Structure formats: C-alpha cells, structure tokens
Image (cartoon, one colour):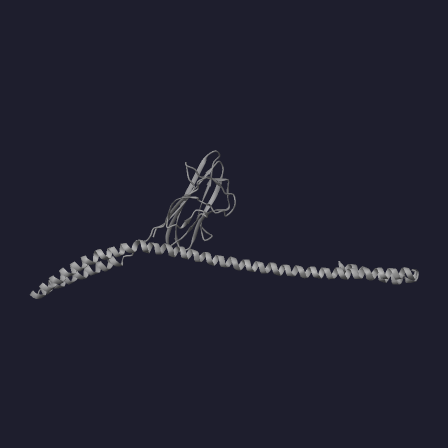
Length: 295
C-alpha cells in the first residue's frame, strides 16, 4: 500500500514537471510543497507499520515462550501423576505384606515344634537301631526324617495369600452420552477391594500385574442406542451394542479376560458414532461395571 502511494507521488511529480511551463510559479511551488508533505506522511506511515510488525513479532515470541512453559508444566504433571500411581501401588503391596506376614510367622511357629519333635523321635530310633546294627531300618528312618524336613521347607516356601482385587459399581441415575469417546462414570460403588476403582472418573487402575476379568451391562430405553467399549490405555479390547425398541427397555452384557500390567488404566467409553440418547439405570435394572483379579 505504501509503495503504491509513493509510486503515485512519483508519477504526480513527473506530470507536474512536464506541465511546469503551463503552471504559474507560485502554484508549482505549492504543488511541490504538498507533494513533499505527502511523501513525509508516507514515510511516517511506513515507520509505524515497521513498529507494528516488530511488536507483533515480539508478541508471537512471548506466546511461543508461554506455550513452551505450559508444555513443560504439563510434562512435569504427567511424570508426577505416574509417580503417584507407583506410590499407591507400593502402598497396596505393603498393606498386603503387613496383613499376611503374621500368618506366615504363625505357620512357622506352629510347624517348627512339630518337626523338631518328629526329628527327635526319629533320631532316637536311629540311635537304637545303630546300637543293634539294623541298617535297613536305619535307612528307612533317615528317609522319613528327610521327607519331614522337605515337607516343612515346602510349607514355609509357599507364598502368602495375595490380597484380592475386585470392584463393582453402577450408575445411580440415567445419564445421557451422545459424544464420541465419552468415558462412562459409575458413581455408586458397592465393592472396591484394593481401592483401585475410582468412581469419580470411572477408571480402574491395575494395582498388580496378573490375569483380570471384566464385565459390564448397558441398559437402554425407547430407541436410545449405544456402543460401549472396554479400553485399556486408550486401546479397545471389547465392546457391546444395544439398540432399544420404542417404549421398551433393552439391555446387553459381555465379559473379557485380559493379562494386565501394573499401572494400566481400564475404563468404559462410547465408540465413534456409536451412541445417542440416555443410558438407563434404576432399581429395575442397573448399568454397571465390574472387574476382579483371577491370579
């Protein structure tokens, strides 16, 4: 725009010079002064535009710096969240150890006197038979003592009972889910052994690695329909689809069995293009989510 105006001034100057012979001296002088003023104004406009461009560049740099800072904060929060998961899982394992360690110690205290008594009896018998030279009976008694010791060691080496993991939750009221990838929330928790299911988010956080089973039920009414998938760390592992009839209730359920790792997140969500209307849950039938560790 500025270049166009300067070009127009140059053309105007050229025209005025060519017509100088026809224009009186005072008039020509006034025209030249006017053109000089116009050029000066254009130069100021150009300088202002340059300042605006510089200011916009600075604003862009500041915004980029803020974006980088926010990205760093987000990455830090993700790392801290992972650390909190690990702390919670360690707490669960420590609780299990404190719960079952007395059982192991009690088993040890109960078995040791029995083993010592049997071994004392066997050693006495061995001494008697050695005195009378019965080598066959001595071998039998030694084998009995070895079997007893082996049984004792085997009982002590058996792992303590692992703390069970299980949960069951359902929706207390109907809920509308019409968006893609909407995580379902089950606000009423009836069972939560291990405290790994979070009712505010609908997410089950795997406390220990192992084989797990999950089942869920979706109830619909009067033409509502949804496809709901079981998701582990944003990857689908199973789904159900229910399309209810007009003025009627319909429901469906399914079950999956998965090998999971400590820290995995398991939840239910609507699939892409797979839902509209209300998911029903009332005293006549619950939309629910359950899971438990098999081993």
